[in-house]
Length: 290
View 1 (cartoon, rainbow, N blue to C red):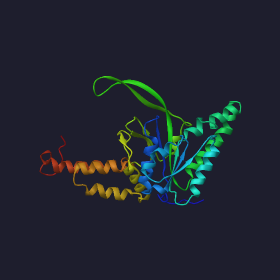
View 2 (view 1 turned 90 degrees about the horizontal axis):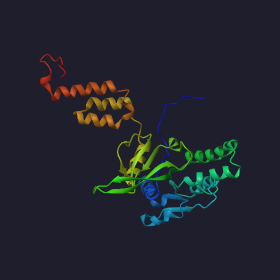
View 3 (view 1 turned 120 degrees about the vertical axis):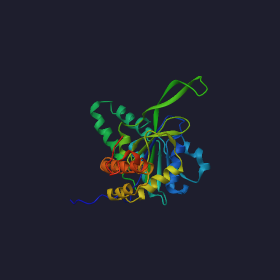
View 4 (view 1 turned 30 degrees about the vertical axis):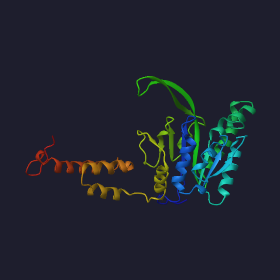
């Protein structure tokens, strides 16, 4: 048992895309995967959605494994292993994992066939966890899609008229799955816009909606290979900042250092403000903050 210095090396992405039917989960996953690999032949899709991935075969020559019922955890694990053993595969898309939970032969079905007794959840939970562990331990990058239950509301459209809007609500899988992921993208409408509900990379703002493109995958791969930034490097950037706007970008870029280097950010901001508003300071250099 030894302590070692933390390093980001050989990181494999664990990404999730969730949304209601028709919001673009499969298409978004494919663009994300291509951004990571830059080679369609290095992508494998485990398709449980009636060959929906094949509808996008015009994008490139990616590989498809059609997974049929029963959608047991063990069947999913077997599919992952088939993809891993295939030469050249770097990204596995599991489209979707919802069938593993509530599809024919999935966890809820298994529990029902055992008699729906509470004590049987331990058996079902262990099988489900084995599937989650296999996803997390894969030698490939993994992108999972997850269905969301659908709800509707009446909203005022851009033309001022009332319109019916479809929303995705709760993810159809065991609660807490998104906490296992590095990034979880939640598609919010049928224009493929998404928000980020979980982000360990600090690359995305949870408050801003955007459309997933190949550039999103490229950004994530760059994060995988990037050498972790040290506090000394961030401090050097702070000291070298020439404007408040530049300092603000450094602050946003290095969210994990915002608290530990808060005093340094504030001091640098005050220095830059003195340069912008010299009349607010006396001739002897003593600041008069207004």
